[in-house]
Image 1 (cartoon, one colour):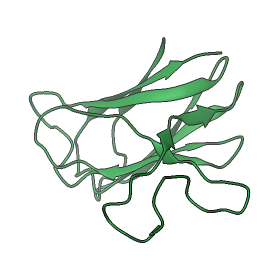
Image 2: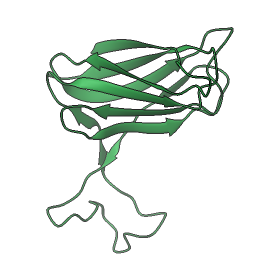
Image 3: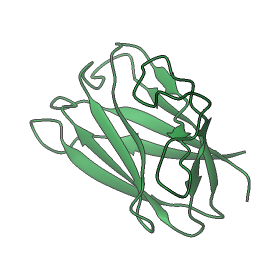
Image 4: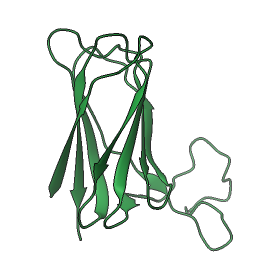
Length: 134
């Protein structure tokens, strides 16, 4: 398991900024963890978007909802060759339809691009990204 640590210090009064970090080896995105300090922590409305700069694929897109640290396990729907979600139900629009999901692939020798929105002024946090494989 590889871990990437990205300090988040929003640069504007609105708490918006972007960060990038190199990815060595690629792999599969297993987890995203936002760690908040005890003071001057990112707002509870902070929106985090993570993309793979090489492929342009959005790996993670969420709004934090807690005042404490949070961990997410992002997953992607799998699609067949006809762009239909893979699953075992005849009603793809049903909210109860079981779907097949998998981890997001991350390109080797790319960069994570992290965009922070609505983080709040003079706030901070640390983002930890965990990759497996490759």
